[in-house]
Image 1 (cartoon, rainbow, N blue to C red):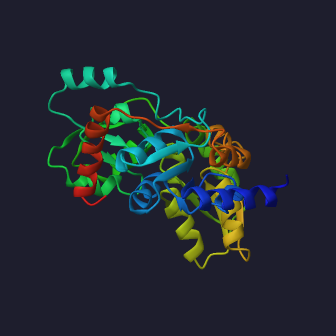
Image 2 (spheres, rainbow, N blue to C red; image 1 turned 45 degrees about the vertical axis):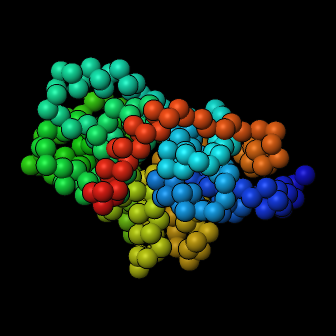
Length: 305
């Protein structure tokens, strides 16, 4: 079975079984082509909640599938590849945050959406990379613990100097591995290109950027910009997707190492197996976790996220 035949069979099966396929932007292009919705993790969760389908198939990583389940507890949620995790989401456990809260009872705990459902149960409010500044600015309490990404947290702290933001040493190992030297080298090699980076990059890289934003923000900026050349400082698949969207523009990689192996774990064959009922994993969360994890997401929505 070649790629086109596999895609055709997936499209047939999802229609037959009333499956809605959600694909994160970091997925391979052949997966995006058969998805019902593509985008950032929280945007996919909101779209899933509104979709009429009762089965959601998430092509991404585990915390994303958990978030879909939290917002749609009545639906069946499938993770296309069970081994697709997220090192950042798994860096801290609930006990570590509970210990911090016991020692710092006055702190408001802000959780990046890239956290496990279990960790969300002990946090006060959730944020996305695009809403973090807006949400944190609206918190009345100036004392904040931002988890797990210290680079995103540092970016927020610089924008909100009136807040006392405490950080733990965590983050995305893929984005955090990019150096300021690589950014300088890329800009020297492509002097007419704008550097677009994700706030999960280290501060020295962010400071060199012409634009800092979420995955969707980077894509929107590149599509709408009059500029014709861009250096993409996030997962390398985004440069590929942008080239499809804007064949008249040029997109360069900030680093050839900006590859998320967990995102790449999902293949078109995995999606086919999941649709046929021979692969994937159903995401199951107990009632207590669903309720408590939903609380910090609801707070984010209340504050405009």
